[in-house]
Length: 371
Ligand SMILES: Cc1ncc(COP(=O)(O)O)c(C=O)c1O
Image (tube, rainbow, N blue to C red; front, top):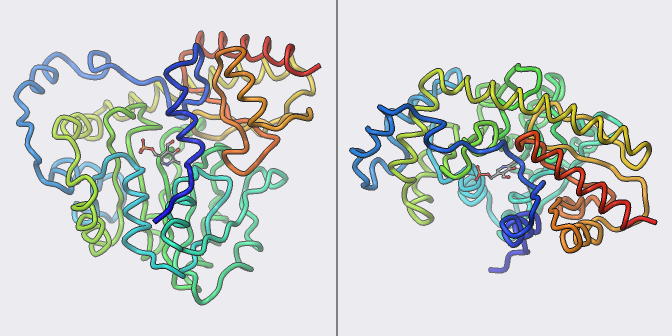
């Protein structure tokens, strides 16, 4: 079975630890263990037995996760290695070759690549800039057929940082209901809203929902590799049985830390810290963009540690980002990675000073690259 290159991840994997400035990170500045935990917890980690444990997630952790989703209990939850594994298991366990998947674009392109490799017919519907990055629902309606088995959304969205309106969510549910299709909702950015109002999950609003979450983005703990899916008991169990073939279990230490994060005040403290960073960094970015006059335009993100910039000069986005990488040691994601040349995705979840320095370098590069 062939799979196309996951351009976004590949470019990051190859370069993010080599360049001087990495503005591709789509989450917030990660914590160290010392910053995250108190001394008692660090001491307790020494006694955690490093076995396989309960392979779909410990009872305590699944209970803590289920409490974030009204109406769910621990049997609705499967814990996975990052939200990436939840996305993978959802596609693998639900879709068959020839099924149709209606996929929101732009998007983190993992679901796109996996589904296509499984010979699923992926039909994109689009978030439109002129609609403030809300979906074109007429387009979505026009794509539905009797083969439609799933509608996949990313909410809040990577790369635009937009959040579906209540009305758009209701309409998507209506369309899914009529087609008797699943909704796969990648909600890994839930909790990273500038407004402080947590985006509602699709879980609980319709029967056939798989809601995917994790600690990598809004919670700034990507190295824990902690993700989960919340769905019907049957789907949670099926995904678990498929997971027997992928990674069996998640790390025992990671699960313990995730449990502390999700079951205490720490959860809100982390979200609060990140929201403050996002607000401050958005000001830095906006002032910087203003100083460049008409080189860029953007619709500010409502959530997520990223901004999706449209540039108004003539150069291919991969060429531009390759030049910035090679000549300035600065890494930025090209719109090409989302099938949207003419745009750049820039990470704004780093420490403020780092962002300021990165933007300085970006400006220097722009002055040299565009005549
Ligand atoms: C929307 C979205 N979903 C899933 C992932 C995978 O993240 P992880 O497996 O670290 O949770 C990412 C990573 O960038 C993402 O942006």
